[in-house]
Image (cartoon, rainbow, N blue to C red; front, side, top):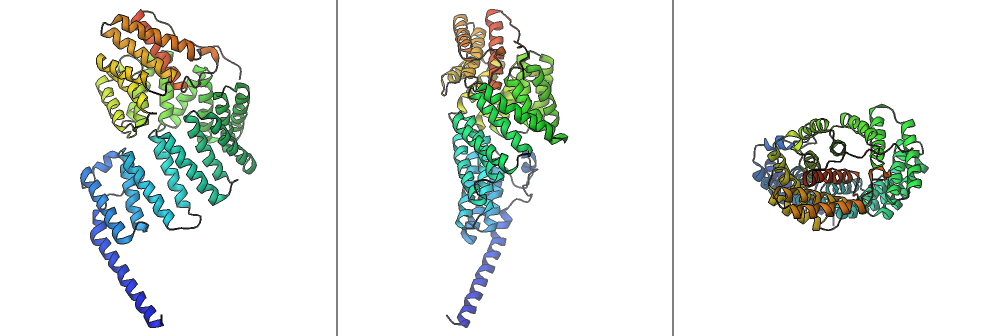
Length: 478
């Protein structure tokens, strides 16, 4: 090809580029939102965009389709359209569509074949967070393993960013009960940190997480030694509000799982003040106050919690905050009809997963019980207790609330049968309050141990007329 032909080809390529840009401006950009979607966008602000939500979604899909046709899947502008659509779907709780957008963006970035592309790693991290938030733990684990492989290719095997990825993978494995696999990932993460950053606060935090894992495996002496060594390191190296949050979160969870409830309550009360947007702190403290029978504090706490998370749009936050507010009779002094509608919202957002179905059934049964819809409550609770996997704490709670529903329907024999089942299962599988080790596999987390015990206490009072106080164990040695 001579020089003249080369120049002609460049001019033709330039004209094609100009044409694509003009087409984009005429057909695509007018379809984009008038109001940009940034981190501070809320469901309310999105509603105020010129177009209604269904039309807005249609316009953005149309913009993306046209953009891919004119510019190609991997064009930067098409990536912008795809990310904006992902933000909208995630905001609306539309998990399948949001997941599809981010997976499509990952494929597009990979097609560019950029050496050591950090954007691919960040996309995988967003995917893991999205899947975990919606309870799709096996899928989140798979995405986390892919993210780890990408991180290793970017940084090598002994970088602290690889330790972050290993710790994330370990947490996902632990949530699924894969404790041995989680331990291996957490040990690898800690080994990297101890080598690369031995005095960093995250190294000591990693030790507390590993210690918690060992305790869950009933390796109590080893686990407590690792945990408390990590906690001591955090205390020495953490100053200021951020340091206080990390120490309180680690210590509060440890105190709670070891039955030191009053001390744990002080830590969680402070955490709610320091991190009001973290629903887990509110959730744990609400469950604890209900178990302790501190009704006035419980009701004030729940009212503040529901105000804080009134605009929540994800299943986990809505499910936990609503369930907490229903643990004591009267629904935290709030409109039980509104709480029942909130429970229905959680049900609609629940992903189609065997992991979330039993929890959804328990929430709906409890909500209907508080709303005095006892037949519907019984149906949900029967469904909950029969679903797999069978977790002792959840089954105890389901049977306890089922006993209450049957009693309210005047079916005394069925009520007593359900209560006897709950009592036998609790005595057999749930550790007693003074055992010092409450966070077992059967408990399905200290939160569910507290819920099961609170439900059982109410059922005994309702069906048998027998009240028993919350058990406060003796202080155990650190």
